[in-house]
Image (cartoon, rainbow, N blue to C red):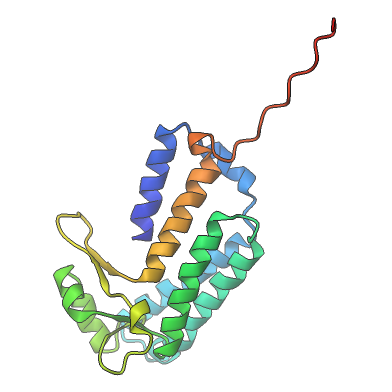
Amino acid sequence: MLFDGAIAAIIIALIAGGRFSRLARLDLRWAWVFVAAFGVRFAIIFGGARAWPPMIVAAPTLHVLSYVFLLAALAANWRLRPLWIAAIGVVMNFAVIAANHGAMPADAALARAAGQGPILDLARAGRYPTHTTMDAHTRLPWFADRFLLPHPYPRPSVFSLGDIFITLGVVLLILYGMGAFGWGRKQSAAPQPDAGA
């Protein structure tokens, strides 16, 4: 969902007069921390899919830690207002993941409807440790992956309320950073008084 939103934002920004070159003025701080957080998540999924025992054991702690990284990086960039919205979503996802032993609960029926049955099977076998299936013991279920982006969308998926906020925040940041619709562009200097006045 986040990837699709970012691609859509770039296309819209380019149509609306945005430029990639303007992204440099965002001065995104601790960019490496954002990269590290997603790198940790990738490592968890990669190691879990290959049934590496050390990774499966460490996955719950590492998953929670990746969100701590994200929260720290968001705090360092608090001056960028679009990230305030993304931060709300990160807090939501962090809360439900921490409350459910380091895994994001997902609605099994919706996951299968989105064609994510194989991922669901891996999660049940402990080989997709970032996720688990929702049941009667799920904590904070209203923050879980319980919403469906269905067919005929080309990339159907199950997502959480937090994912909506994160995607919206990133979309707005891209539009702002690229100067789409004139948003965020530096105002031109005020005209000087006529020398003959």
